[in-house]
Every structure is written in C-alpha cells, then in structure tokens.
Image (cartoon, helix red, strand yellow):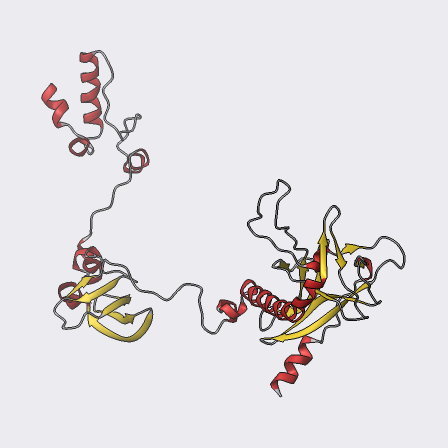
Length: 335
C-alpha cells in the first residue's frame, strides 16, 4: 500500500477519475484519515473542465501543427518580435532587430547607436540555424532627448541664466566699487548703532557709497534693492534681481575674528527716521556686462557734508531703476 502512495503522483493518477477516487477512499478507511490527491475534484467527477478549474494551469503541449511551424520553432529558440540577433559566422558584428517573423521569412532591421540603418529579409529556417540571440545591453538614444527641442538645451536653464546674470551683477558692482574705493578712507564706521561718519568735508555729489554685496536673489525682500531685469533664458521673460544687505564686521560680538568679514559702507549707513534728515540719495550707475544691463545702487550726498556729519538715507524713497525694455534691446542688437 505504501508503494502505491509513493508511485501515485499527480502525473500518474490525474486521469484515473472515479476509480482512483475509490482507491483513495478505501485507502483512507484503512489508515483512519482522509487521503486525497491535490487538484482532484471533491465531487468525484471526471469532467475535464471541472478538473481544470481546480488544478493549477499548465502549459498545453505543442500540437503537430505547432511542431511543423518554423515560426513556432524559432520562438522556442527566443527569436520573437523585437528581440535582437547576430549572425553567427559574420566577419562584422552587426546587430539586428526582428520586426516581423512568419513561417517562411523574418524581417530584420540593422541597428547601431540607437539608429535604424537598413532592413533585410532572411528565411526563418536560416534564422534558426545561422543566427543567435544577443543577450547584452542595447545601445539606445537617450530617452526624452531631442536636439530639436529647446527645453533640452542648457540655454533653456533659468538656473544657469540666473548664475550668469548674478555674475554680471557682481562684476558691475566690483567695477563701480573699485572706482570709488578711495572714498572709504574719508569715512569712519561706527557701531552701537552702526553708522557712517564723514571724516572730511564733501561737496554735493562727491561722496558715493556702492552697494557691494555677494547676496543677489530673484525674490524681493526687506533691505533688498533692485539691480535690473534680466532674461535668464533666450526666450524667457525678464526677471528682476535684487541686491541684499551684506554687512559682516571684522570682529564678532565676543571679539573673535570674523571668518568672512564684509564691510561695505553703503550697508552701514543709517536709515533716516526724521523728515529732512537724509543727506544721501540712491542713484544707479548703469553698467553693461556681457549683454546684461546692470543698475548698481549707490548712495550719493545731495547736500554738502562737513567733517563729523553722519550719513543718512531714506529707504522708503528708493525707487526701482529705469530699465530699458529688453525686447527693444534685443531687436537693436540684431540690426
């Protein structure tokens, strides 16, 4: 009886039907517990449809027509649509893609570096015996990229354009600051509160403080001054950039050297709170840098200063620079 249990696998008894069920019923009575084979219907029916519904689906065996079909035989070797193949005894390793296959022939397209080069037709029988599957990676064009699409170009990057525009602003500021750097020697910077005091007398328009800063951003904010509008991409709309307050004293509150001191008198000048107190006015110095029009903010004394005068300016009176229309500038540049 044990021999029967070992031998009666699902494959051997799957077609035995009612007789096999009766045998297992007798066997269950002898052993005192139920013995059943997986996949058999508990109803004891020999209906093939019922057996199929309760058993795990298995691949149907090939028919005689399948065995005679060269397309079927090719598929058994992996030669199916869109697979890539190589000719076995070719002097050059040319890669082909199967675009169509039938019993008589297969259409192959040569591919190289993501390009379709040419097509040829080979007998399906020859494909099976004289070609082999390519199992490695296939070089393809970069997905989503098209040289004709401008968004793929770095020139379409507003982030890159922003860095360029910011660099132009820095260069313009540096140039204007260097021109007026000698005036810093005629000033004294004080703290608690921070302020700027004239050491010597200045005639109207002689004292100029430049808004030198390393902090430039696209967002307006407190203590920020517009330095112009810039096209960050070739086809983009003008974007305003702003110079932000930048002041770092040589020593910290604890008396330790500052790692990155930055003392531009412009940002140390006191903001006026009383009417007619301001003696400095914001004026813009326009600089052209690599096609960017930069408006560098400066403070210029609109009244004569004498030694010991503190410099004041009214931030609420600051207006944005008068910027030339960028579209007109581009049109003029093309002429």
